[in-house]
Length: 393
Image 1 (tube, rainbow, N blue to C red):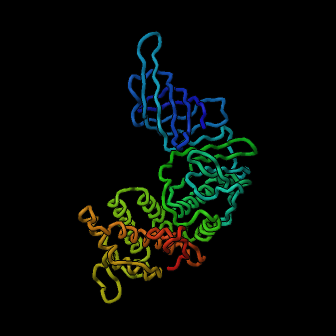
Image 2 (image 1 turned 90 degrees about the vertical axis):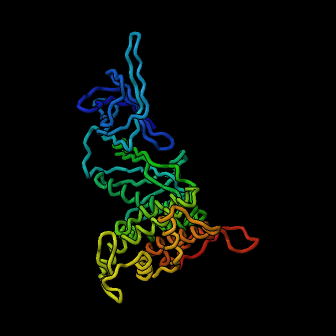
Image 3 (image 1 turned 45 degrees about the horizontal axis):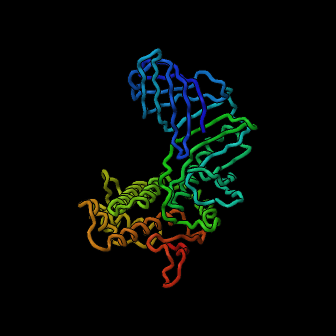
């Protein structure tokens, strides 16, 4: 996908014009090839922006910051010429004709790394009262298009936020990092907005938590969990917890795996104590630590283990092991974990963290199934298959 633009370049206090070819590659990286109409002997500074000034195109690029990654200048002969390539975190192109919030449009949102919803039939999910149609898309990294017709232009950002949340739930389920790579908004058949996003598409080999062989599982998981996820997301920083689990599944180094999931527990400990325990009168805050505000230990510091055990009691989640505390202490204090059983210890820790997320999302209330990361295959001799078990807290 690419577009040719004429832009103003802003670097420091200087301005010049340039021809710009804006592209989103198959891996979803957004880059621009820039040919300035003024000669550059050195690349522009880090404080570098560009935006459309005139074009035959109906879309205009908003002012965008860019980072120069390649630079070439040619001196000599009859022509002085410079050109460079930049990478952008995002680029937004809007209609040159202003849109009203009440204009009726269709949003098409391109999603990466979904192993789900790949059947020939389209899938319709409903979250927060909004129907979203998921279509398979045969791209290098873009796997699906979320399509939402007949919405008001002023609702597009709300729809985008809903789909970002769907991506996070799918990321948890698949072990892949799913993201929004591109947003298209059409009024009738006219493209009136284009948003391009550089996203990480390399985390696409993770172990599944929610099986992808039956679309009913992930469909049920999204619709059942969505409102709870939205309510708890900021309380527990759920997106960060999900991301750490995905990173742990993709690194080959056991120390990194254990460190990531130990950090998961640290984030869980802190935000449970701060956002739940303090509010309930269980703890008082003391810097990064918490003091028991009630019970036999009133006035004493609540330990890492005690806070997480209290979290499990409050949420009726079983499976805590004191070895998780020992693993955390070993990796934080020494940078390594010894012993021939460290892989089993890590997988038990990761399994507990997965259960924490499923418990917070009340997956048991829907009688949902999951794949235990510490036992992903059927634990029966001479039987080959996925260990697809019902989630019980």
